[in-house]
Image 1: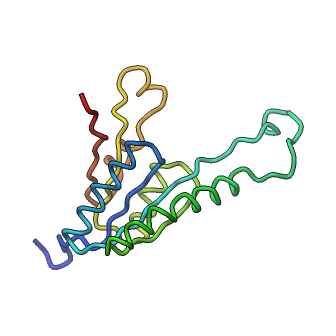
Image 2 (image 1 turned 90 degrees about the vertical axis):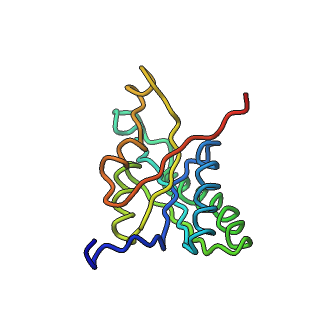
Length: 155
């Protein structure tokens, strides 16, 4: 191993979409951070909003839906980071906008992330083809290790 490769995990990025799956990823990220003494950045990416005017329809008002979504996401992230902080884990939140997988990879590089911990919804077949997989794209393109998982279902 060269000197530039440091296997110590100091900073974990945990992207969330507020689903049950992403809450499970938060739990894993928290346990990893606690065990490793790492910090967590909890990220939510707001996908671009396509306005009806782009299709020749009249504008629907002076509301910037993307900014509204970002503000709502930031507010929703506060209790998550607060819970980590209450548990002795240094945590910050980050809200960004763009194509989710691309922003996750870019922000991981910009912030010097050591590991990404994120959920996968486990879609297959036509749903996977139509909806794609953010987690799959992150695994393919991230320059740091990525741990993926899905929520456990009680049988």
